[in-house]
Image (cartoon, rainbow, N blue to C red; front, side, top):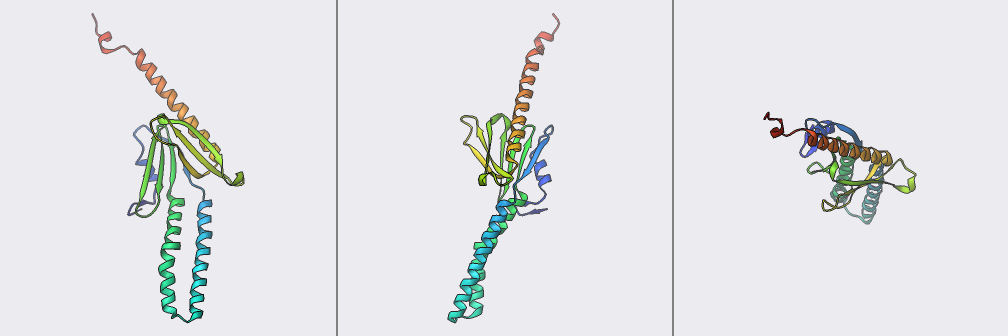
Length: 197
């Protein structure tokens, strides 16, 4: 289902970025730990707003004004960031295909950012731990070849070391396929050589 810029069917969205002979090697969703941290933050902010509202009520302000003020403050400071965090966690995806790497970042109902990188442009893939390696996720950084772009990092990737290994293997297989195709093209006779004398 599509709601403004948000596509809730990530499988259908992933297929939009595949060419005819391209297949998905791995699809990775981000770990829910970040969403959990934001739920805790939102809960604490909600408690703070309720506490401020109760404090103002003790001073003698009308209840309906307090409720309106708390609600007007709560929506942009708690509800909207929590909604965007949920969308980030639920619908963002990292795709590794036989040809490229696709990062689909759906950050809200109104904004989607898709970053595609050809496997040929990746110089290296690095995985590092987060939270002192006490959690089952980590960070993956992609170093692009010189002159192509800056380093690109993704946090909260489940089993980051395995994902980095799969991406590295996909890059190696891609390079081998390219080399084999180039070698095969070099050994095929040209059209002029095929003509009989």
